[in-house]
Image (cartoon, rainbow, N blue to C red; front, top):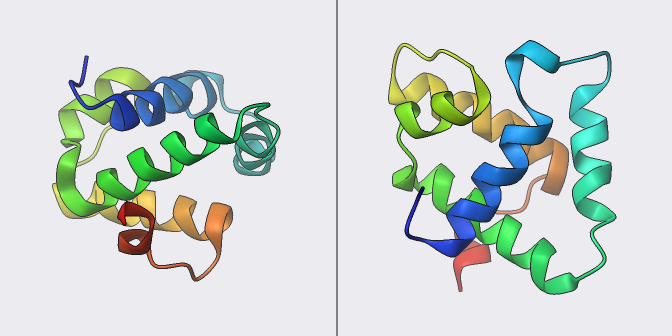
Length: 100
């Protein structure tokens, strides 16, 4: 469990939506839609902040892998994976801007 509540929210949602053993066609779009449909704006913002913190290197490959079943050879490979998901969620928004 990560001590940062935003990162923990991001990892919790990722565990359910990005599990490598349960992926299906269009899983990325389903993940985006599930987060967009969260009832509380605070939950959406916490997820976004946790996602941005993850892109800033505050989540290790081991943390993400243990929750999702993915296997990355390096922190850079994880970053590339997260960056491609970020673009699906937030387009060209700068992750660091979500931390302000």
